[in-house]
Length: 516
Ligand code: GLC
Image (cartoon, rainbow, N blue to C red; front, top):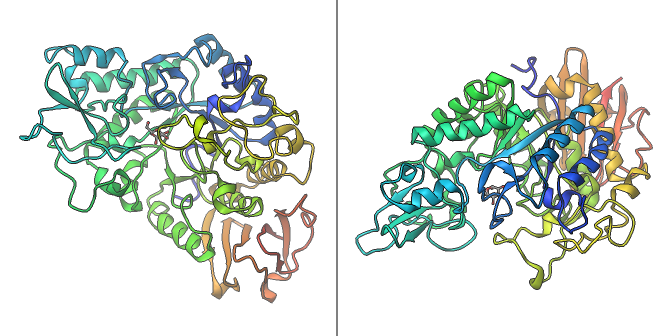
């Protein structure tokens, strides 16, 4: 399958709309700001913009609690603003993708308000209701996200509990109810009719559920520890239904399936499921070349033979930022170089292209129930003290906002933003980086310990990424000292780019080589 190329051959850029750019000066990002930010994305060279939820929401989980799937929250603008954003993106050759949140709604959604109004209401079975356990407590021992608390809340009126994997304000829906499923598919149709070309599917591994709701086995008492327990075979059938609707219009879907084992994850991606699946195996990986190699091979030994395509993500609005996690901007640049040259469809998180670190959020400014404010800090646009956020922003700015701003970095050839731009340009120019076969090189190929080496080949074209991850530098053997040109160098403005490779690799740097 390696010669077919992925179903979407570009690079995805995630916008977290509250923090991307503020168009109306109220301190919260919005669609007007997103329109104004499109030139930066076109400059960078990405192909699709996925926005986290823009829908009407009480914002208990900042938009992942949807009260109306088919309208824009006033904090972000209007449907007309969305249409204008799609048109402006289109004019720049950028696709717009939205967040599809299939597993739950807000408790203020009219579906849930109806469901909760009476056990006889037609919407009752659109959600998950169960009688209390014999002791009056929750129906099983499941724990919800963001707190050591049950995943069930008692509805006093009916005496039944409803299920919520996340906040009590985010009741899970029941995909086995045909009318609910059809309503969800209609949501996709609604947005595709407005020119939306793709979707990111939020915690989509949860939509198929064992309706007997068995207790978790002993010792598994935290949501994060549940891992692959949340793989139910009915999910696949729902994914097929979603896929059929998307195929009618040629739209793409990338799933957020939190499943650890690649063999299990594979059920969610492929010709009869989702086009792409996020792969988070590098996001949590220790900074170690052998471990990165192991994880890449672990995923690809399953995905590649099956013709499935990973979407490698190194950051998002739920996890500490790349530069914060890895401890330095130099390492973040190395990681980006690997991400953008791996087989698959890379997904970038806004601001990682600026090498941003998490903001320091003092206790009196914490707003997220899940402790994720740091990575959601506003993107700095200008070198002014407020970084282009005209009134005080909803979260503190990230460290060194002025020097890391878009304006400062676009003007500086040595910046991280310009490195990303060069990497994206290389990806577009070299089919081998998109549809080429991939092999992780090792000692037998002359690769020393501490260096991750990824080879991509397409016919006679060959590129190799070398990432120095041990912090001591490396000298490769004679095989590497001739016949290669440096295509990308993560150091400063890439002074070696275009010159022959001499076999030396500095500490905390990466280079991409092209066979001369
Ligand atoms: C996903 C989102 C996260 C959200 C959760 C519930 O993991 O990325 O931000 O809180 O789902 O929708």
